[in-house]
Structures are given as C-alpha cells and as structure tokens.
Length: 235
Image (cartoon, rainbow, N blue to C red):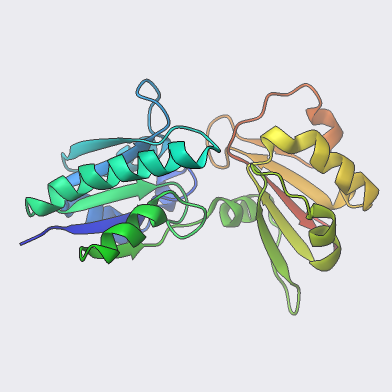
C-alpha cells in the first residue's frame, strides 16, 4: 500500500504559531521532506518545526534553487517528485513542510498537483501566513467591512502595481526586498508612503518593523519581507 503525502504549513517563523494538527502530522509520518535552496543552507521551515516536534523523524532533503528560469524550476520539481514517490511507493508517509500556508505561493503545490494526478493520496494542512502574522504583529486589520484586499508576489516584476494600488483598499506585497526602491517610488507617487508598514522576518529574533520606509535606504533586508499598505492608515 502506498504512503500518503501531506503538505504542512509551519507558519511564518514562531514555532508557537504552528497548529496542533501540523504538530500531530509531523510526529506521525515516516519522513519529513524539507525544501532547501542549496545543499549548504539550512531549511527555515525545519528550524521552525524543530521548535515544537517532540519525536525523532527521518529527513528527506529536496533542493529547489532560487531561480526565475522555468527549466531550472521544472527540473527541480521533477527530481523532488521522484524522491517523494520513492518513499510513498515503499508505503511510507511523507510530510512536506513549508513556510506559512501550502496554498499561498508555495513550491509544495506543484508537487501536490503532480502526485495527485499520478494517483497518490494527498492532504494539505493549512498554516498561518506571513502576512496575517505581520498584520497581527503591528495591530493592523487586513480587511474591514467592505474593504478589498490584494496579495501580490513582489519578488517578481509587477508591471501593474500602480493599477493595483489604485483599485484595492488594502494591499499586501510579499518578498519586497529586491524591488524596494521601485515600490517606494510608486507609493510616493500614489501618496501612500505614510499608509505603509514594512515587516521583515516576522516573529524571529532579527525581526524588523518600520513605518518610515525612508529609514531603510542602506539596510539589507531579508527575502522574507512584507509590506502592508492600508489606505485608511496603518497607525
């Protein structure tokens, strides 16, 4: 009998924000699959999970290089799928851990769809997203009454950012570090710079929270950096 694949969200960083169900699943599976951007770098998702898992587990390391090249990405997904299927075919259950929630800009969903099409049993265990945790951290509502919300993956070029800023009440920009100057210029043009808060590595020891974006001019920010723009104000 084949094993089962779980996609488990471990939350934004604080182990206490993992769900009880995530903890239970991670303590009962045979393997925990961990995504890594390189062999040398530790898995941020595993560092979070280690803070709450109480039992020993086997690790399955999966390499996903940081790349915008479609071929590189597809090749990494194919190799990772094969590694997981080898364990599932032996009747072993595998939990793929991911930061935040598996359904929000997560590599896991590519594997989930492929393995499901191949006839493997799969289940998604949701987690707290980084932008929800960030909003809670700074005490800002992401949506009130009839307010509209947009969540944008700013690690990629967002050519219609100006239109998005005009058409939504509240905007979440995820992974903004590479495009910070461009985003700040757009916010100033739209007169939204004082309606914005930046949160980097939410809930971790080196967390940064900044309401004055001009103070970030020479600061090296983590890939895990989010902006929340709220037209009614963030303070």
